[in-house]
Amino acid sequence: MSKFWSPLTASLVPYVPGEQPKDKTYIKLNTNENPYPPSPKVIEAIQAAANADLRLYPDPTCEALVRAAADYYGLPSGQVFVGNGSDEILAFAFAAFFDPAKKLLFPDITYSFYKVYAKLYGLQTELIPLDEKFRVQADAYRPDNGGVIIPNPNAPTAQLLPLADIRQLLENNPDQAVVIDEAYIDFGGESAISLIREYPNLLVVQTLSKSRSLAGLRVGFAFGSEELIEGLNRIKNSFNSYTLDRLALAGAIASFEDDAYFRDTTAKVIATRERVTKQVQELGFRATDSKANFVFITHPELPAKSIFQQLRDKGVLVRYFDQPRIDEYLRVSIGTDEEMEAFTAALREIAGA
Ligand SMILES: *Cc1c(COP(=O)(O)O)cnc(C)c1O
Image (cartoon, rainbow, N blue to C red; front, side):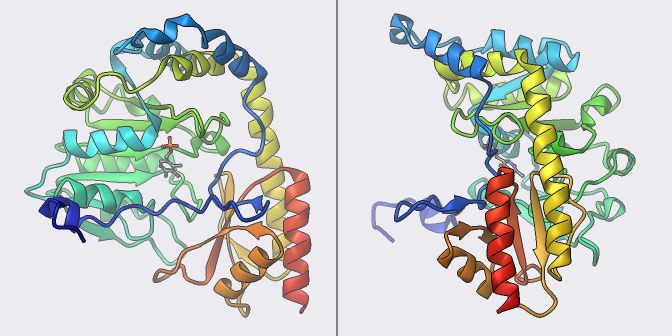
């Protein structure tokens, strides 16, 4: 607490990212980063953009990247927004669309940044419980709310909500914005982008951080009706006109151009996920049905917090959430096959001890 802080600053409860430790080299399975490097074409494009033009401001409309993403998904440019990571876009969306006079709805177990943004913008919230199998209950999101936000697949539970359920949710809530955060959609889900044409209140948010191995570049996207995209631009241009730098723009465009690489690395992550799921089940763990680049696992007898600590001592970092309903679970990002072998070997030692 400082006397220089505004009442708002004093009231905030900031997001705590997964640790990026510097004390030794860990096998990092704690922040859902992609284990594979970005496409070599992305690196080349960034290197080529590292030139004298960096003295100039980047294009504030990010037109070339907006067009690349629009073409990729078969949308008009006016239905695409880009931002400095999808976290920034989510923050803009909270400010742009959610009604402070009513409650914002999201799952009780979900991406913990939503609570942080709600607090930042003074929004009331209502947490809608996942069912006992950690599935989002679409029909529990009833109208007379100030907006809805759901990740699909959900984090950290990894489960996918079928498109039919999202459609039902949109039918039930036509008068407020519904944001679907698709950070993990490329690992086995079907995007709700196909519903944008029918539902002007639907905003779909995606990122290059997970499936395109570019967490370090900070590039996210939103897709929706022109009125929603215009709303995001109004907030952005009241905050910072130059959210994406020249290197990020160059790298992101190149990423969409190398689809073969994207498909190949995504397929590898999915194959590893399926194999790891079987292996941990053989060790007595239960796993939710993951359609993301991580698994969410629990053991009927071994306490999750202790497994987390023992894995850490063995040089393997995973994510543990000390919160109701999920304090006996671990979230484990999918690494390379080699990393996951080290993980399952460590787990075998712990479970056998
Ligand atoms: C990782 C993640 C994000 C943020 O991604 P960035 O584009 O890196 O900011 C957003 N939502 C969910 C659910 C995530 O897991």
